[in-house]
Length: 392
Image (cartoon, rainbow, N blue to C red; front, side, top):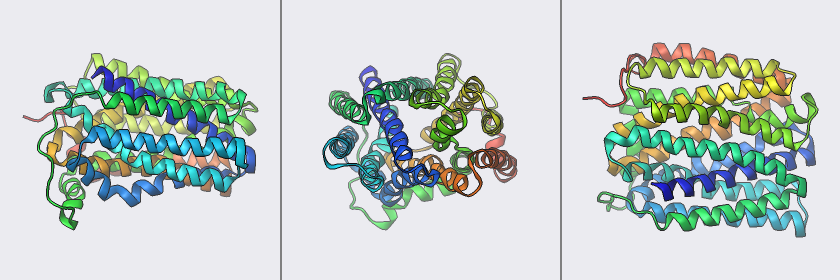
């Protein structure tokens, strides 16, 4: 488990560092909010296109090898960004091309990485293991943007090169972990086997409600794509403050995940999840109205804590409700939902910011999240009334 946590931490730091560099470099080149949205959209498209195959591959082949190869592909994409920046000349379209390549590796990396945790621990230890994994991820999500912002002082190439090395380390570390993988799916890929994950989620109202709540709430409330605009044009700061703001949600999430690792949720998990998502929406509105770095940092930190509570509940429900032989396919679909809420949410934020401005876009997103919470409480009473993560 420790080696897995090291690998996940290194990969997360690499991805977050690259995100800071890409966001600042694109906005520095074009000064257009819409282009920041395009970065999110281009990252999301591979996950959508590959969702069925990614899940089937995770259930059929060695999951460690899939993640390692995916991270090597991500490292190769960063080499492309490095060479474009230093040698060939960089443009918005060049960055988007390599971000798309990064997204291909990410499609396999993100969803398959999650399926490794249940193979490392016993079922009764899964909630704590998920919280520990989330703690490492959030600690890395704090360190990544901060390191990215500092390294950007030496130029984006320094960020891309360091991120590449971190991915290489993670890929190597994963090859040494031992997992308890059950009998893999051996039948050839067919429409039925590829769609099995979607069918399972659709027929399980608790899983469907948890995944879709996160999808629409974060899709509407995702203001992180606007952070370069807030840092540069509203807070009148530089890339170091951008790194600080990008790290703020992870700081709050880390605090929440550390608490949950010591005090696992064992009652009223449905109500807690809805309350956490509502808090996320309220903090998004507060962030939209902020004109100071400390208040913006505080709002983003609470957003991260609220989101982490929701994430731990959702991830635990998905893993505990899903048979191991289907975890790859279900996790792949779940990853697309998460990617939709994150990367497509960035596109939505960039688009609305281009139309209405950054502040109205963030405010509308927060209000939209609150509306989703109220609506989902009516649509998914089974999730609202869920008492414990494990049944029986």
